[in-house]
Length: 282
Image 1: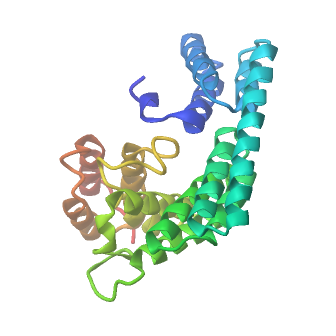
Image 2 (image 1 turned 120 degrees about the vertical axis):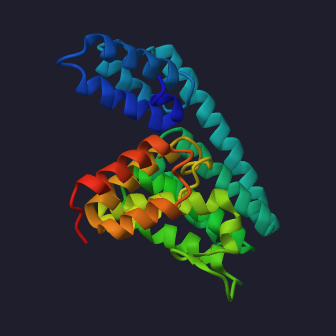
């Protein structure tokens, strides 16, 4: 419960399914509990395909009435959103068009259609009028791409979000590419670092990943809320990647400056202890 409570939605359910699969051979009670929570969570959302996947893993017959009613509500909502978007397009109101595409993207994301969500967010980006809006919608694109497993998109749009945050900033202390002035938007900055860290992790760039993960605010939101990677998870990834790629001096300096020790001391404490006992490589 402590672990899974850090997540919601798609990330929570997919993690529960993984726990159920991994515990099938040796922990029937854990599997049963994971599937129970996953089933309850999936019936709170609109992703009926994911609900059906949970039922299949649990050897249960899906509730056809629930699927039909949920899909019908989703179809009606999408029709309304598309009508509102078309009105905005007819009136040539850029802000309304941008918001319309964002609403459509969030709807597709809630239904588990991440490809359509990504396309809607991408189209909405053309109607942004401020760098903050560009950064925000790029983070939306990153989140959809992450759930699709498209780490090329994750990396590219994390960089675009970073660039948008830096727009108009001609000076300031750099924080791994996010200027200090732009980093005042801690929520967006944390999400960018999380996304960039995950992309670097997928590319096996341990050093880059470590530096990104330790920049995720300890008390800040993870990628788009608790639906991708928790701040605690980022701390763990950062510590492990640092152990794999930093020399001892750099590791100690990083842990000392990261500001994570007080709030995530058990993770960083383990890394600090390991740095004294294990020969880490450059």
